[in-house]
Amino acid sequence: MPAYNAAPWIATTIESVLAQTHPPLETIVVDDGSTDGTAEELARFGTAVRVIRQANRGPSAAYNRAFAAAGGDYIAMCPADDVWEPRKLEWQREALATHPQIDVTFGHAREFGLSDAEYERPPGRGILESTRFCRAMFETCLIPAPTALIRRELYERIGAFREDLACEDYEFWMRALAAGAVFHYDPRRLVNFRRHGGNVSSRLLDMRAMAHEVHREYAGELADGAFVRSVMAGDLRQIGRYYLDEGQLARAGVAYRRSLRYGISAKALVGATTLSIPGLAGAVRRVDALTRGR
Image 1 (cartoon, rainbow, N blue to C red):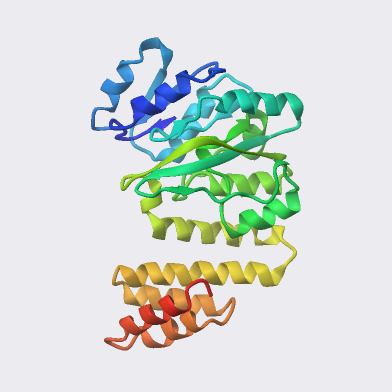
Image 2 (cartoon, rainbow, N blue to C red):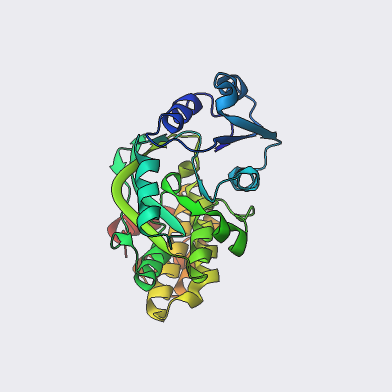
């Protein structure tokens, strides 16, 4: 569990972990340089929780520190602001007993807080067919990280979470797929995924830029070139829109022009040709609204 200034939520999260019908063998929290009351909240749990403290380096580095310290054959990811369903680990242990070849098992999640929504589901359930799942994952990340249970041997074989990306999990899942990892999906809700202004869900531009880098790196894993180009063009159009919303017109124009290298769309054409003209940013926004999703 990586924790940075998580005092408002971390006690509820830890309680949901310790109250599992099949509790974890150990619970490790990496306090990633918190400056609020996180340390005091952690102290309430005494020896039930192992706390590791480090200077602030981000969630990827905190996860890597925790994985290195953990002793189990399987390690569960748990951000400090989410809430596990009581039978999460029980169901996942049953899946591992039934399918010992599993490298990563994950499940469904519900979002609550700033949004109230169901997390998007992958194609299929149980052991997932790798080609179909890889295509779906290339389009969008379908694994809610707080539900994931990862085989330690896989982590050691393919390497740690990259610490130079805005989000620690998506590239790891794509790397695991490229390495032939076996993924398993439980359609039952395992986690309640808290959305709030301070967590990674608010950094939309960084996340989309990170996703585009992942798509560039793993484009060769898919045989459908047209699909790959469509996804990458969509990345850049969305990046352009985020820059536009922030008033960074020059960067928005660059993103729209780069999008045109992968595929033609009205949104990208208007953005690429008009953003250099004073006063026309509003026209790009109107076209974006009319062509949303294209």
